[in-house]
Structure formats: structure tokens, C-alpha cells
Image (cartoon, rainbow, N blue to C red; front, side):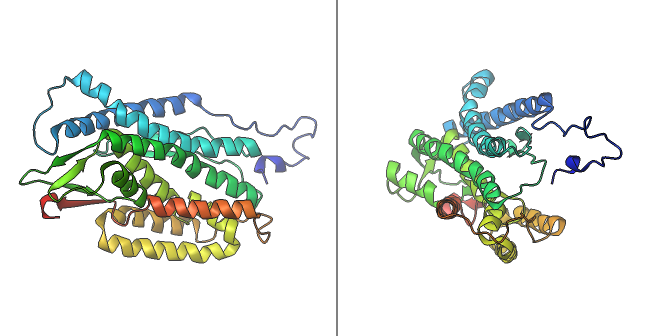
Length: 317
């Protein structure tokens, strides 16, 4: 129930009381965060493009700073399109069901690889039914995925295979199944001693796939948590605990999971293992939504990688 709808009638006359208007936002704040995220991701995109031109060497780029920043839009536009469509999927689903929600908040971050921590919307009232919860939860991953797939194939096509230097250390990006499929289709088997030098657009798609997989983890207030609860009801609490355990095991073998594991443990203690209830918790979902739930599981499988980012000596692979 909307707490504003429970105002005592002995304090507010019925003919004067009005519910809080929905979908009201401080638009300036959303625009400011979006502008800052464009700036941060464009700067990071320029660094990616400089590395792309260097072909795993330490050769400095001959492009001017304005030219590099302009080419930084390859990464910036691609990642903001993926993240933006993901959040707008949630937002428009909320609008469809008249569930009060904010416009997307983009999060700029001075991180060397991404320039952003993603985006989110705030849902400002309880979601009453499982069908509504399911539709709102799955709309984001599907919208982002449908954009990430063509961006991935275009980015991989714009990448190129180069011979690795005799001595090179760097970061290895774990390749999701969909990423491997695109690389195999477009470039075939890459010989030993060579590597695919990713165009910034391909890296944006890789990050988009990773963000999709993270959001589909079946825990708490993540999209996967909403979907899991809508499908399983209270039994989803067991899935939440199992997921946290799996991530803790992954963090032992891959250091890039440790921050995510810590965040999941914090979510577990902050929100508990039980998803907020809907009034129709025992009512099963219809068959089309069950098929969509399987599609969400398939999206998770093809976007997931057990070791997202690992420091390695590439020449020793």
C-alpha cells in the first residue's frame, strides 16, 4: 500500500486530501549525473582508443587530445546506450503498471576501465503482484541485452587480430559464451601468440554483458531476485543463500569477484534473504512468463564469465 494513501481522515479532510503525484523527479539531477557520466566514459573511451591504436605496444598515439576524446565516444555512446536501455526498460514497465519510479540515475566514476558504476532507478512504492514484479524486473535485462548483442558483433568486427609483443603484461578479460561465439564467427580460431585487440565498442559490449549477468544474479533487489521470487515465491530465499555461497567460492578463485561478493553479503544483511512479499505470493506465473524466465536464465548463462578481469602475463597463456 502507498503510505500516503493511509493519511488519517480525522487530520486531513477527504475532499482536501490528494495522493502524492507519481513520476515527479528533480530532472536537473538526472541530467547532471548523465552529463558527468558522458564526460567520464568519454575520457575512459579515449584511453581505450589510444590502447587500441597501440596494438599492445607502448607506442604513444599521434592523435591530438580533441581527436582522441572524439573517438572516446565509440565506447561512451555504446555503454550509455546499453545501460540506458536497461534502465528505461524498467522505467517504462513501471509507467505501464503505474508504479511510481524515478528516471534513471547514471553513476559517473573515475575508474580506469569503465568510467561508470552503471545506472539504476528508484521504485518508490511497493509492487503488489508477482506478474507486475516479474515484468518490471525482466524488462531491463531484455532491453539492455537486445542492444548489447548488435553492439557486440559490430565491436568485434571493428577489432583486429595482432601479434603479441615478446614481453607483455596486462589484464585478461573473461569471455562470456556470447562473446566467444561472436569472436569465433567473425575471426575464427586465433593462433597462439596472437590476440584480438578489442575496439572500444567491443569493450563496451563486454561490460554491458557483464552488467547484465550481475543484475540477473537471483538475490535481493537485483533484477534476478525479482524474477526468482516471482517464479519461486518464498522458495527463492534458498536460491538467494545458494547464490551468495557460489559467489563467495568464485571470489576465492578469481579476485575480481571479491568486491561483488562483499556487496552481496552486505545486501544479504541489509535486506535479509526474503524478498518483499506480494499479496498473490502463492499464485503461479502464467506459461508465457515462465518461458521468459527461462530466457532470463539463458541470458545469464551466455553473459556470465567465472573470471571477469584477471591480471596475467599474456605471453604465458
